[in-house]
Length: 449
Image (cartoon, rainbow, N blue to C red; front, top):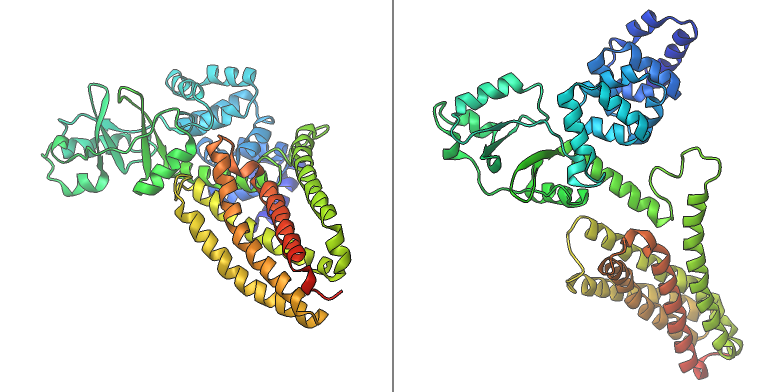
């Protein structure tokens, strides 16, 4: 049964107040299938599903939803039921959910949690949402360097269901993180061998206030399943696991794409009386773009005599501007992606030179094509030369512009995904127009009148 058919069956049972029948219907479904079901239901109906599921299953389903979805469904759940689900979640998942709720309700729910869980969640809530501290889990296994491999495996066996990731065991001495061993290390080592003898001491760690993107970059660079979070004295505070980092990469990519259009992830689709914040962001981008385009109008007005002398020049303005804009946007996308993934930074000129070479080659091909077309169509070799040469030069310039603008914005401390798109497009448009009109003015005597 697909998610839509299952959702219809659930609604039928809810309308008939047949909760036992709904529980029986849902029993064979896996948590991932129940997540799909929840997304086909209104929040009150979704909350009813979580009420009839066993606590562990309901908590896993709720944890699989987005933060916005969790907040909507939580509003339809009684405090006692929601507290029971929070108690079944990992501390980082519970923290994320509580962060979506009004402050007063979050305090009530914390009071309903068992003291150890409440303490762990309260500590995580103290860190900024997008920091390593706000993302980390408080469930891990730590052992002494004097423990043996057999003792550590026994500890894993006893606490395996409680901890967030069993593959890494962290080695702590005098409250400081001094090493890590993997499950493989434990299995292949003699049972009586002490952890100190084979633990890995070259550690990759993050600070609790490090940005979540920085932690994701560390995990990707060193191929880690989890990144330990330590304070200034080296005390282990928690771990950020791979599943959380995948969510970070996904959410950051979504946010960057939305920011290109002036939107912010999670705010465009929420029901509000009037979307003042969305309007404000979009108007800001459009007003900036409008003012920069006025520069283009002023440029064209300064070359009015040139355009009057050879009207055919105007025919090719859209092709030149659109092509240069596309090349600049392509370079922009590559640059924002490179900055986000830390593949390069603003201190290297190599990528900018590579984009310039690329623009020159692409410009040569496009310039020859459009120049030949202009010469044949208008039967004017001079026009073909001006259009083709302007296209070539414009693309040479557009490619590095698309790279240097986001790099410059990052140097200034501005998120390059916010305004790089409209700024790059308008700058390449104006530059292309200037190159084209200067070329036309220089070779006006060669053009057919």
